[in-house]
Structure formats: C-alpha cells, structure tokens
Amino acid sequence: MRLNPFNASNINVRSSGGGRIPGGKAGGLGCGTIVLAALGYFVFGLDPMQTAGTIESVQQGSQQAGPATTDAQIVCSASEYATEACNALDSLNSTWGRTFEEQGFAANFRQPVLHLFSAGVSTECGSGSSAMGPFYCPADETIYIDTSFYDELARMANNSGDFARYYVLAHEYGHHIQTLTGVSGQIRSAQQQSPGDSNALQVLMELQADCYAGVWAGKNRNLIEPGDIEEGMQAASAIGDDRLTGGRVSEENFTHGTSQQRSQALRFGMQGDDRACDAITRVG
Ligand SMILES: [Zn+2]
Image (cartoon, rainbow, N blue to C red; front, side):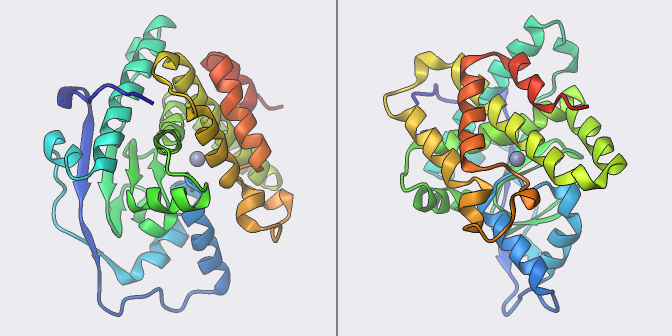
C-alpha cells in the first residue's frame, strides 16, 4: 500500500523502551494462564479489560523503562516499522475523522494514541507485555504495539507484506472506533448479563474490528497495490482462532473468530461502509 508520509502534527504517538529484569519470569502461574498469554501473542487484540488479571501476573518479571518519548519525529523515525505505523496512523485518523464528520458525529471523534513499546509497558488497563501482541486499551484510548510482533506476523502469515501490518493496526483502530461509538460498552454489559455468551460476543466485537479495518482499506483503494488484499486475507486467516489453536480449543471458546470469518469480515468492510459493519454486533 502506498501510504503518504505521516505529518507529525496529525498524530499522537509515544514510545518507551523496556527491559526484562534478569532472571525475571512469570512465577507461580498456573499452566492455563501461560497458555492464555501465549495465545495472546498470536491473537492481536487481546482485550486488556478482560484479561487484566492475566497481564498483571505475566508481567511480574518485567519492568517498565524510563519515561515515554512523545516527539512524533523521534518516535516515528526509530525504525522502518515505526515509520510505517505512523504513516498508517495518519491515514486512519484522516479516514475515520472524515467518516465521523460526514455522518454528523464530528464532535464524537477523538484520535487514539499509538504507543510503541518493547518488552513491557504500563497502561490504564494494567501492565502489558510483548507476549500479548498488539492491543488497544479503552481506558487511555491507546493502541499498544511492540513492533517485534511484525516479524512474528510475517512468519505466521508466511509473508512480509506491509498490508498485513497495516491490517493489524487498522484492526486495533477498529477497537478505538468501538469505544467512540459505545459498541464496546454495550457488548461489555451484554457479556455481564449473559456470561454464557461472553465468548460469542467477544468474537462479534473482533469481527467488527476486522470489518472496520476493511472499511479503512476500502476508502483508500487508490493507494492499494497488487497483492495487498491477498496479504491482508493471508494475515487474517493466519491469525484466526482455529489456526492458532491447531484445533485444540473448541469453537465455543474462540474469542476472535475462525480464519474464514476473519477474512470474510475484512472483505465485507472493504466492500461496504462502516454502517455495514454495525450489523455484525447487532445482537438480540
Ligand atoms: Zn481485536
């Protein structure tokens, strides 16, 4: 995708380094917690609100490094991945800002912060770690990414295309949109009212975020290069719950949807506008 170079004044970014305390490892954790954390590594968008307990406990062995850098030029020039992420963030801000405006909700739009970290990070949703993969924290409206995840993604999806990386960021941005529209709050209360449907509801939320990622790509069609869509679809299918768990987890325990559902949601968003994605979470 040929994204325009970011304009530092259009984006809110920060970065912080991190380091593991020597010998630090998650101590005294049950096997289930470790499995869940490992799964999170491959399933971006692990919801920190839901898994805060897990994050906290897994983070025992990590530390947070010094204060965050907030100068966009410095943050975005740190690596090629950082620059790419800043370009995508600028594009997402302008696409979604315009969309809210067109629909008469300009006052409801706020840009999220993009926080690039390594190893560990502390957030309003609890401590986060690289092992969780990229995630969005609604409490501080921030997307957290350790860019080393992108190398992992390239291995998993068996490609190193830029569009796969944009898709990850656009998916997390989708969770920000859900926060702005109130959908995440509605899903959260539906989950509390009917805990048995909690996973199914979480899947709907994830698929809607995939759909929103597709909406952004669809609205920037002119920047898409041959092969981009295939990269996105490949990434979407590489990170579906069925592929990640290798069939070891039954479908009712999925929280992100199957590979097929995910790539369908992405494609669906690309064809429609964001209102088409709203139907995904219209439940009951
Ligand atoms: Zn997600």
